[in-house]
Image (cartoon, rainbow, N blue to C red; front, side, top):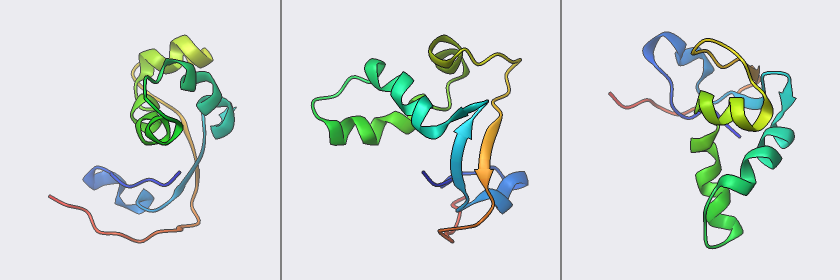
Length: 87
């Protein structure tokens, strides 16, 4: 999963690879969230899943993530994609 949207102060992360959230691997997070992502087929679920990964309340409920409005992301700084940002 790649970082495709960032704020101005985090443009260095654009194109980096997300490898985990909190202390969980990306595979663990996906497995925990997949049962609550409503879709007609696995492809639609894959498309919708990233939008659930940025909601702290969902992460707290499904993977036990704790924190005050912050999500600790595990990022591989090796950029796989180099895109442009829209303003």
